[in-house]
Length: 150
Image 1 (tube, rainbow, N blue to C red):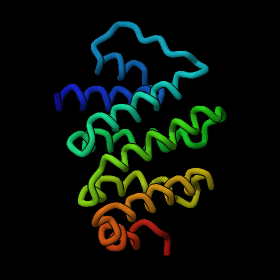
Image 2 (image 1 turned 45 degrees about the vertical axis):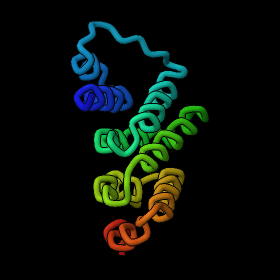
Image 3 (image 1 turned 90 degrees about the horizontal axis):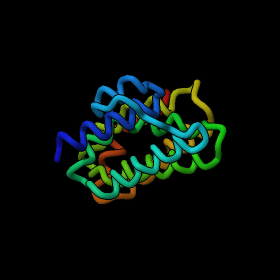
């Protein structure tokens, strides 16, 4: 099960980053058909559903897809933006407070000064969600200086 989850989450991440050939290789398929209109939204929905179904046990495999999901917060399609927010929130919800450090690189990248205000706002929402979880306040407080620019 762990191997299948790792392959699925890496393939979803590759597809969200428009690396179709890599995803085809990971999935061992010859063809992938993605809708140009709802393709990213559907992929993000799959990532969200995957995070919901695997929970804490599968969260480490989903963290790698976090930045790819967050990057879609700036998409021109509202449905994709909504799906990106939902997927990133489910990944955070599946992560336990002690796994917060695994989320740090994606959150740090999202809070970069060059990123859009919408992306930064979503990253702050995710931080708040991490902080509000059981034992999350301590985990976030310890790492907050690394996340916010001086």
